Image 1: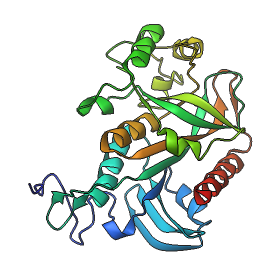
Image 2: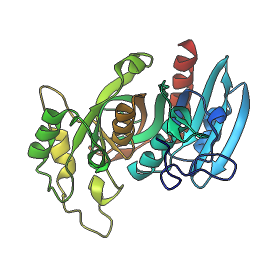
Image 3: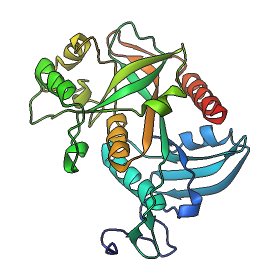
Length: 289
């Protein structure tokens, strides 16, 4: 059945509505970043760039590095944007834009988030790299789609131990793709469980002028333990990426440059260098595979 124009929205040039991309402009290996300005810090490593597309906060460069075709896309901040980006990436490869019908043979994308994050455990060093084994959503994105519940036991433990108000969050837990994650295994990469929240200040228990409703959130997160698993860091996209990738049949992994440690109150003195080092590490592992 053909998708209605109100559901699959295309621009006049045949590109998908928000990303402004046409199917031939997208690679099957995709790096996502939050900041549009970080696109250049990745694509500068490409041997050449085939396509440069920009609309709103969604900027895309597609090119090749050592023969491997890669797209790097900025999502902006937050899982509301992740909902747009992941759905439209999937549409680009799995919906025929001319017939507006879902293809019978589906294409699987590899999606690698390269982002920044703050640790919540004192032993995790600033300027370290962390791979998110699980994305733990304090947002509601996953709940707006039919799903299998994710790791409901882990989610229940979080709700109970952190004593979260259901008005604030109903956590969901989705794992990374284990096969894709193996490409980035390295002694320098910490494995952790990453919380994705809907904001940077109150939702992450930061206080400027407003007082957070859960002002003991970070200490509760630090103390959490479920079958030996601890919570390691906070950011704003990973769980949404894992949830949408899992639902759509794609592979996803999130790599985090730890720039802050909330437990020790410290912040990196070389944040750009740390992000650049993570980019170089990720690209090296991608072209080896």
